[in-house]
Image (cartoon, rainbow, N blue to C red; front, side, top):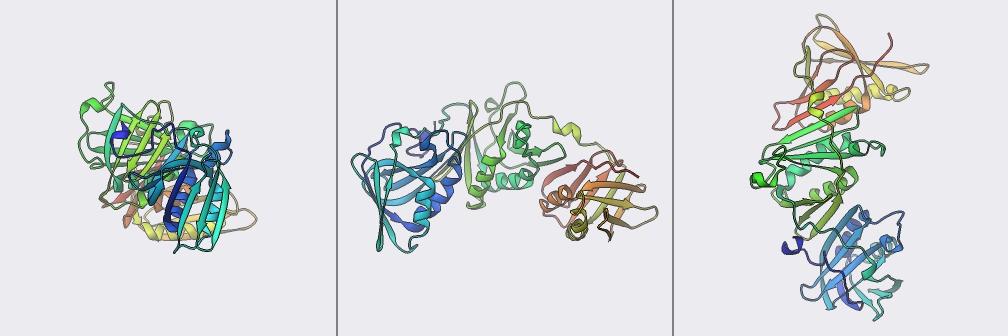
Length: 405
């Protein structure tokens, strides 16, 4: 259970109301910015608009928690704690006050015996806020059983940066609003799709230790989970602050996932249901292949996209017979048209195929290799973009757009 891995405060349900501590303005401001992302913007209960502050004199740490019942973020900072206790304070108000105080000064927080009022003192200033009892604040979910994994932070960060942008923003397609994570031995596969494009990244050494078979589902020898993109964007921010060789722990059970490292905890509900079998969407072979410089492709698309944006975001890619170049075209009716030519390596017959330029650009920008290979069969079948000479096993599928002759 989590209480055994060095995360204090996570499961406590009763708190002392009186509290007194001194901490750094810079540290408190950073922590508030982090946990405020998990504070409800439209709370179903007033306390959900608050941040939970818990001071522990034994460890001289101040823990801050935001939780909107779906996403929870907890972090801790160093503090000189005279009196241990806890209280919840309005997240927005506290954040705005602290952010405007002198970053070089220390802050003193003191709550009264009833735990209803807090005084915040800094160099030359004093502020009073009305809080709510910490006992009214919901506990972050505990994961006491189920699957436990140790991941390399940089592997998970790379997986999220390569897939998150492809998830859907349509809440009707609930499963597609997340990223599907699949673990098998020491490998991890991340996938996201919105129905128009699909991004898949497989990393072979994502896990610190090979997972025992008993950790996996008996049905398919895999551990799989789908997490909401909103939660994973916070995980991405969190991971970007870590060192490349840092490890994070992942716990999953009963519709909840907990990610933790050092003094930070992120909890998220999972998206329930069977994620689509996306691998069957990827063609086994291709009749046409185009290899080209990724940056040149991006800059050409961005120039032509200026006109495409005026109409429907549609660009056409034309491969002509006996040619060593492709044309990128955009035609904005009643506005204008544009075209670019790129020298490429071509294998296959002539073709004219159209895409939503935004989808193509977002896929290209998630790749870090010098060259990419664009593969397709027909104007109405999926196209694939893959990196050339890259360590990453990355596949980006984008559906073409039907155009009238």
